Structure formats: structure tokens, C-alpha cells
Amino acid sequence: MPAFKELVFSGVQPTGNLHLGNYLGAIKRFVAMQARSECIYCVVDLHAITLWQEPAELTSQIREVTAAFLAAGIDPARSIVFNQSQVPQHAELAWIFNCVARLGWLNRMTQFKEKAGKDRENASVGLYDYPVLMAADILAYRATHVPVGEDQKQHLELTRDIAQKFNNDFAGAIAEQGHGEAFFPLTEPLIGGPAARVMSLRDGTRKMSKSDPSDYSRINLTDDADAIAQKVRKAKTDAEPLPAEAAGLDRRPEADNLVGIFAALNDATREEVLRDYGGAQFSAFKGALVDLAVAKLGPIGAEMKRLVGDPGHIDRVLADGAARAEAIAAPNLAAVKDIVGFVRRR
Ligand code: TRP
Image 1 (spheres, protein in one colour):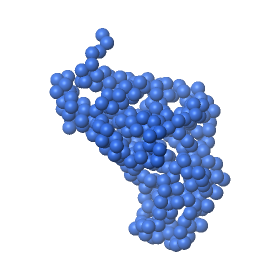
Image 2 (cartoon, rainbow, N blue to C red):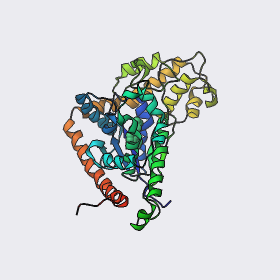
Image 3 (cartoon, rainbow, N blue to C red):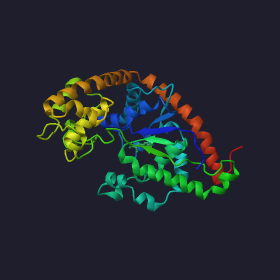
Image 4 (tube, protein in one colour):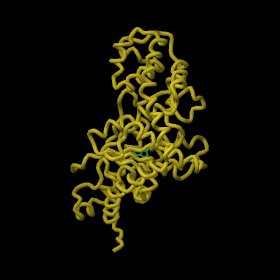
């Protein structure tokens, strides 16, 4: 595999309120990556409509996710921030990848099975095709690294399968047209950190989710200090004090989740947190967690609200990002069309 220029790409869906899981599992890590890599961060509105969205709500959610990116510290001058539907190459490359990906590959996708539920016949074709569009998002930029949550691992495997099959199926044209051995990189997921999986505050065995009926299960990025305090204080725990070492969190999902959240918010490891709080009762630990969460999330929520109040500014950021994204994706897509054998407009 030839060397590809290091490039980070990731996406967040503009559906439902952003919560601590989205922040710690994705957005906070996006911010950190800017220091080391060239980064492209996308609000994936084409993915959002695989499930029906109220149009006015979708519009405000696109701006809200953008506001969260900026409020959390993504710098739109350094990184590219845009929404997917403004860059036509995503949908166009997805069509070509539809003809590379195999039905059998998509039939194995566990997230489709979860999201489609029992009434699979009534799911949109787009929901089924979701992972192919995701591969197009990433490979339109020939991105090499994708920070995502653990639940997206299978979709990244599919992205690599599509890249590899394209590279093989068109190996002759790829070489003849001067691209060497491979046109697409085999993109690596970046999964990890103490909060790779943030769990519900009410049930440590289930993921924190925007669709959980109980608002006490999650901390929203726009929650105020009172709401954060109430939710942390009511969070489910067990009867034991905190262990002295991370191994003692095994089979204690709620304790593990709260320690993991503390660690991620504080840029520490579980071990470091337990060095300070091992042996502590949950009442004391929760007090410290409230203070930490309010200190870290309060300013982000406040800045989000300020930014959402200036949609003109957000829309200019998105337009600038889309133009810069398209400047990368358009020549890549033109090369893909040449490789496949289409005739260019001249
Ligand atoms: N499927 C991702 C999620 O739900 C969102 C997404 C769409 C994405 N396209 C992407 C993430 C490309 C990383 C790269 O979290």
C-alpha cells in the first residue's frame, strides 16, 4: 500500500440533542486531533434523513451541531467544518460505491438491524445503504484516519472492504492513470480513550442515547448547572465504595461509567481517577463529578446558545467549509470517474 497523506475525517448526525456521549466519544477528540493532523469534520445531514426528520427541526439541528463543534473548540480556520449536503461528491461517490459493495456485506451490518427494528420491510432504502454513503464520505477525501465510537467499527471495516475492492477491480486503470498501486487508502478507525462508550446514567449496560425516553439517562450539552447536578446525583450506582484500581470496576457497569466520564472530562485515565477517589463513597465522588462536569460543559453550552443565536455566522462557516471540502473532493471524484471509464465533459 503506497503512503497516503495523513488526513482525519469524521461526521456527526444532526438528529436529536447532543449529549455527553457525543461530546466525549467524538467532538472532544476531534478538537484534540487538530493540533496534529489536517482534519475535516462533517455534519452528516444526508445520513440524518435515512430516518424521517421534520424539515424545520433538521435545519436547526444542522446549525446546532455546527455550533457544538465551534463551541467545543474546533477551529474552522484550521479544520474544515461543513454539512454533507452542500458537497455533491458524497452522494455521487456513494452511487459508484453502491456498484462496488455487495449485498452480502450490507446484510451483515448490525446497526441496520437495530435501527430497522422488527418492521424491516418498511425501512428506507437509504437506511440500508447508510454505510455505503459513510464510506463515500471518508473516501471522497481519501482520509486515512477516522475518530469514531465503538459502534462504528463495523462501518469502518466496510469502508476498507469497499476501498480494497475498488483498488482491485480497477487496478489496471489505476496504474495506467498514474495513481500507482491503490487509489484509496485503507482507512483506520481511531477508537478509544476512557469514554469510547459513555453509558446511560440510569443503566450502565446501555449506551447513553438521544432516544432514551428518560432525560435523566443523559447529560445534554445544553443542560445548565442545575440540570447537570440533578442528573449526576440521581445517577444509578451500586452499594460499594469506589475501588482502588481499575480492575475493581469489572462487573460494576455504573461505577465504571461514572469513573470513565470523570476521567475523560479531566483528560486522565481511570487509574488516575481512582488514585484520588479509591475508597470514596459515591456521594463524595458525585459531588466532585458535578463540579468537574459543570466546569467543563457549562462554557460549551453557553457558547453553543450564543452561536445558535447568530445563524448567519454559522451559515457562513458552513459555506466556507463546503467550498474547501469540495476543492479536495471534486478532483478525487473526477479521477474516480476516469478510473471507472466514464467520459468527462470537455
Ligand atoms: N455513522 C456515524 C455515526 O452515526 C456518522 C458518520 C457518517 C460518520 N459519516 C461518517 C462518522 C464518516 C465518521 C466518518 O456516528
